[in-house]
Image (cartoon, rainbow, N blue to C red):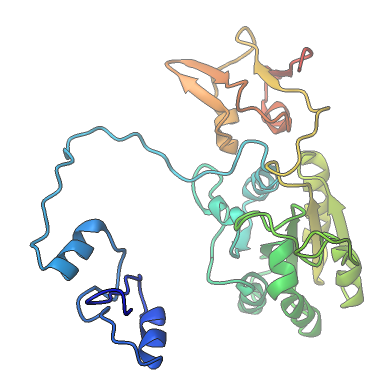
Length: 314
């Protein structure tokens, strides 16, 4: 501060650093010239500090920008689970994580999203509201790290209040959305040191859940079979949908997929799983080999067996 004539603090949103510096007795300028809300950019900073009028953008407005909706990664284990959920037309209370993208087409299988942990607690409320509608089941979906953070108490409350809720923990063995941090269910500390691993199925049973199933979301038949067992019970149930995040683990044994053009009926079923590796070019359906993870979900959904495994996978 002594090395300059005037000191500015440039920070977005609340004046956290600015207030701390002022409490140290140092004169500083910040939110009295810079906006408290919104995202800062060079023009706003130039205007606040130098007093210059904002310059008009020179970027042409008629540039055709391609649509780039957020999408689950190729090979994401959540894709198979949400395909099954959408197929069964279930009411889903969601949570915060990569799986929140399932709210978007073509998966379009999540009905609510509020905050971390709200999937189970919200499902309890909906289940109570649906009690006069026989057969109306509520599915709560959250990730393994979210379950450790905010789901344990919700699941306990589900059992305690006898809520007819199917809790689905999408266990991709990491905290995928925010950087692949470790959590109590991975067996490693945040420093990467081995530690006790919390087993989600064991936790569910310890909390009083009688119906607990572990499934591999790459196996659609297995996933749907477990889901139907949960639908048939009038008690709280738990599905642990377990498969490592595709960005963290690459299984060398997986075979990539290819669409056999002589068998393809161009029905578009493969596009409904929302895999970015599957593309439609003119009137031809293709799989981008450079993007294919080899999960095999597309091979399972094709009604004409037109998608096959590539035998010469490197």
